[in-house]
Length: 245
Image 1 (spheres, rainbow, N blue to C red):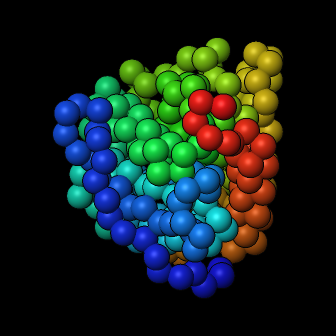
Image 2: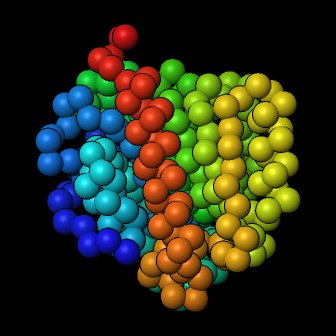
C-alpha cells in the first residue's frame, strides 16, 4: 500500500442534537475550499487507525475526508469481534442519523460545494447507503464496501436514493454474500438507480483492512481503491460546484 502523509486532526461539529460530534478530518494540500468532500464510515471496530489512514489517503487524492466517530471515543481491539458486534448493534439509529447528517453539513460548509460522497466499510458500508437515502439533497455518490445493514430500524427507503452507487463485494464473504450483493444491485437497477457492483472472487470480507493480515488482500484492496477514487472524482467533480448551484 502506498505511503501517505499524516495530515488529519480530530474536530468537533454540530451533531444535530444541540451538542457536538467528533470526527477525524483530513484536508488536501490545496485546502478545503472547492475541494470534493467525502464522508468515510468505519467498520465495527470504531474510529481506528486504519480508518484515519484511509482519510489521509483520500486527502492525498484531493478530497476533504471526514470520518465521524460513531462510538464516541470507544474503539474495539481487532481481536475482539464479539465486542465489536455488541458496539455495532448498540448504535441508536436516530441519533446516528443526526450525527451523520451533521457530518454532511460540516463538509458542505468547509468545501462550499453542494454535494458530498460517502464511502463505508462493513457496517459503515451499510450506513453509507442509509445516509444516501436520508440525505438525497446532498449525497451525490456512495461507495459501500461489503456493507452490512443489520439494524431492523435502519432499513433504507431505496426509492429516496438519488446518488450514484458503486458497490464492492467479496466472493468469500459470509456476512454480505455475493448473492446478497447481486440481489441489491438488481433491486436498485429495477428502481432506475445508477448502480454498479464489482466482485472480488477470491477476497474475504474486510479485504481492504491492511491491519487484519488474515483477510487483507493487497490486489483487491488496490483495485477497490483505484475504482473508488476515480468514481468519486467523476461523480463529485461533475456534480459539485458552489452550494445552491
